[in-house]
Amino acid sequence: MTMFSRAGSITPRESVSLLPAYAAGKPPRAAEGLTPYKLSSNENPLGPVPAVAHAMAAVDTLHRYPHPNAESLRAGLAKLLDVPVEDIVAGTGSLGALTQIINAFAGSNSDGSQDEVIYAWRSFEAYPIVVRTAGAKDVTVPVAADGRHDLEAMLAAITEQTKVLLLCTPNNPTGPALRHSEVEAFLAKVPSDVVVVIDEAYQEFVRTEDPVDALALYRSHPNVVVLRTFSKAHGLAALRVGYSIAGQEITRHLRVVAAPFSVSTLAEVAALASLEHLEQVHERVDSLVAERDRVTSALAEAGWKIPEAQGNFVWLPLGEKTAAFAEAAGLQALAVRGFPGEGVRVTIGEVEANDRFIELCRTYRFEA
Ligand SMILES: Cc1ncc(COP(=O)(O)O)c(C=O)c1O
Image (cartoon, rainbow, N blue to C red):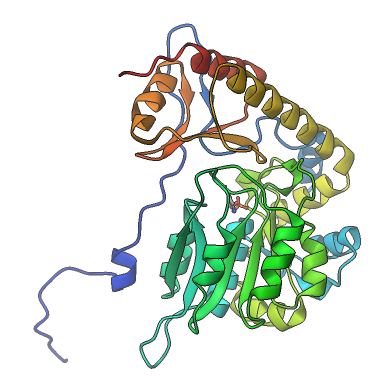
């Protein structure tokens, strides 16, 4: 038997030991006489349409593996979106679908060089984890003061090493959505061998003029990937199901890295049931958008200046006052997401939760 003289602890890859921890939204604290609300994870407070529970209850194949590649769901989406079924790859949440994209296109190479992935910051907290775990280098471009992507600066950040560029619209956590015309102009300047991911986790909530038509952009640009999820508008976050849409020059590589069976049978059945009742899904989204508008109007009336909110959340750019405000919300049994030194993200929740948040904003006094 070979003996090694390697005393020491078990250590992960260097890039893994340097990863930021993903801070999941915390549950709310209890407070006397107040119903607690979780407004810290951009969840849909209304839940899925009723047909989802019926469809899941009827599943009698729990002892069987699911379809390896979520064939039924992809067929349903292909019909709905009028795209070839081969252009859709499903994943464990859109985060799973994004992980496939990064793993397929960016990493470290045999000559020691690292591929680069450009994204705005602050944006979705999981981006650095997915990019760095793949062994790629993340290149972050600060969002502008109004919370919007700085597309010019993102273009300027492109190098020979750039393999993937992520656009998050609406941007989590700052809120603004990109416009179709600006993304079209942007894509015209991006080299055609850079994969551009349009992360549309909150697409259904967008109510701007000139909204991004990402499907049109995927049809006209072979390097565009559209990323979508059932976690937000469809209220299926617990089931973990999302997908990407791209041309086959991209999806054929995604299929190679996609773990088989990554969408469970229950998730697939639930997502299909939700798609079959899209009108009800849209009604629910409309009611959340109405709540969002009520919250943003009330905040504006109370003198708050916040970026355009196009997702199911609002962003309070509080800088150093972030922790104090998050604490005050906690005392009101509202769990919110504070990013220390930057701001607080608050999900649009139940009407009572939104009322309480509005009241907190109206009455909150900043310490001098
Ligand atoms: C911008 C963005 N992209 C992707 C995701 C991942 O969502 P899921 O993996 O639940 O589909 C989230 C979740 O909050 C998000 O905010």
